[in-house]
Image (cartoon, rainbow, N blue to C red; front, side, top):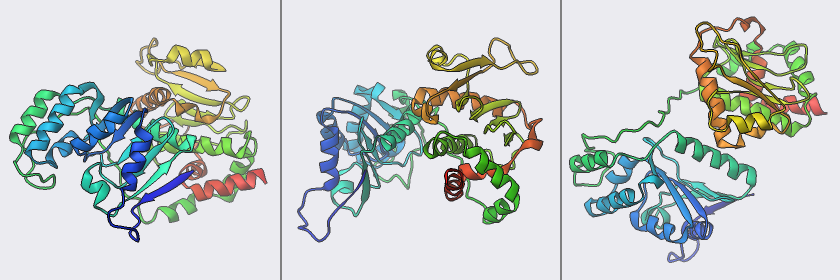
Length: 372
């Protein structure tokens, strides 16, 4: 269930902030994870005093720049005293307060002005599936970032103008980060037209037939969501020659990049298969839990002791709810993208599968047809 959180402008102007009330309720005696670039140090201390444990994901440069000198020193001390609990993620702009069973996502900065003096909107989630998805997102960004070097924080503060303005007069110093950059692009205006010309009625009917073999509509919907995640993570489109989404006669839904399976469904006994990077932290555990496991043969000059694994699971396709599993999967997928530029199986590519992953309206049309 989702609940909208906002100021009731018809009520008394001195009413308590609904954002602060919700944050206080969910943070009390909880493990709190915060993602926000603009945080009032005094308000953060207020949250942390209620929490059992906490972590903060933020753009440290933005966090420091938005405050006047006195508060910058307070932020500096917060980072220094809790260094392991703060990660620097440049260009982060999300505002999220997350606990084990609830998540507040919205526009409000975690400052007194943001929570009490601006017209903001947030959504409080308590549905387990949505909270797990937001948790996965947070953990993915946490693992791909790190705590800032305090020497760089000190240098940044020394070079930062005395006025608090994140948009102007920025410091000539910077704080390094290993976090990935967001490099998305806008959809071309002609994409819908191109997609419609690529999809044949025969391929549509074949996809419906294959989807009808899935255990349930929910099961196959989650599989297409996994494929959508994979496409978003890699940036691959249906026109990329590395990517093959096919509709083989055995009734499966495999996805290959260059020479290797990276994701499969219904290949055997309605399982879901993943490529997993060798050396992953929990690989032994994943192999033990899998219904099938194997190794890919080496390609070209690849070290045969480092080839990726292929694992199949009998449970739901949302197996990657474990953020460590998602990391191991995406790492292996990224390696395959960088291995070559064209798949030898490209002639088997069927864009209709990608369309079902990316276009939710079309996906639901396919699923309805399959299960009716």
